[in-house]
Amino acid sequence: MNNYDPLFQPLTLPNGIKLKNRLAIAPMTTWSGNINGTVSDQEIAYYERRARLAGLFISACIAVSPTGVAFDRQFIAFDDAVLPRLKKMADAMKSGGAKAILQIHHGGSEAKRAYTLFGQLYSASAVPSYSEPNEVPVAMSDEQIETVIREYGIAVRQAIRAGFDGVEIHGANHYLIQQFVSAHFNRRNDQWGGSLEHRLKFPLSVLEEVNAIAKKYGDDSFIVGYRLSPEEMFHDRGYDLNDTLQLIDELMKRGIHYIHVSQGDSSSRPNGSEEDAPTIIHRIAQHIDGKVPLIAVGGIHFPEQAVAGLRDGADLIALGRQAIMDPDWSDKVRNGKTNQIKTALNLDQQSELVVPDCLWSIITKRKGWFPITQRE
Ligand SMILES: Cc1cc2nc3c(=O)[nH]c(=O)nc-3n(C[C@H](O)[C@H](O)[C@H](O)COP(=O)(O)O)c2cc1C
Image (tube, rainbow, N blue to C red; front, side, top):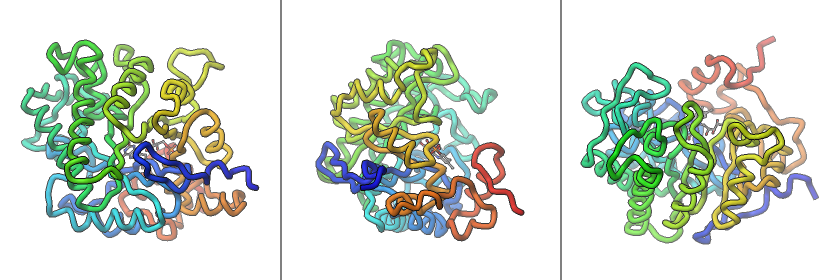
């Protein structure tokens, strides 16, 4: 009996699909797609190398719309020509027994003008993004909103055709969906904005479309997850944890297979709360009360932390940077070799770790993001 056994217990999702353990790989952009928006060979190798790490493998975010491309070399869903390579990526992600999930994404005002249709940025209202304060997006028309909702559906159809086991709606990290939820970014007074109920209409319409397309082209085994940021971090008037709990209720009413809480530190407490207050994960877990599985992420490097996350109320623990730094993490934990876990990037090991060139260059150059083992 190993102290980490809880991590290796299977989990059954609400649609009956069984995950082989309680570990997930967090979605991580690679900036390494081909220049035409297809998945690159380097990315396929990167996914294959990590295929044994977890029961649920969530991909980098894929752009659902030409109006929402947000990263250099982000792969795209809105062209049938990308399908053969998407299929190879799904196969690589599934090759170790994990369920492969495609994270579907629209950048909103966080997109890059140079990459978007007609060089335009789109959001709920003409409020600049957090990261580009001088870039003012257009407030989307009803017709533009309806089109983007349909594009999420098209991305689901592509995911099914490529052989993914499911999709994750990216409703976190200040991208378009979160921009609709946030009263800071959404200043509308129509059916898409104003009250919380109206601000939730866009994410809920996306979920309804995703579920309708999954039902039409897939079957009950298709997994639909939703990733959210539990609080708006940079603007007091955005939304808070209570608003998020209402969003979760509405997601559950419409049918969802997991909720994924995006955080930098999985043991964070709500903004402004006492030091010994229950964590955000604990609060959400109590609220959900076992009705759908909950994924926690953020700062997990050692199995003790992962087990503590389960004890706190999460059903699955996602590894982000740790999955890049040590693709053999789970094997080491299962086999009692935790002293061999690598919690820093060794600058000589890019090829051993199978990390695409552009991803490697970004994570080794951006200071303070990944721990680096210095060369002797
Ligand atoms: C290289 C990199 C790329 C990321 N790309 C995405 C992404 O495409 N979608 C997303 O929802 N989060 C993305 N994230 C956030 C991670 O999913 C995760 O929430 C975050 O890194 C915290 O987990 P960690 O401490 O285990 O790394 C990215 C993180 C990293 C390190």
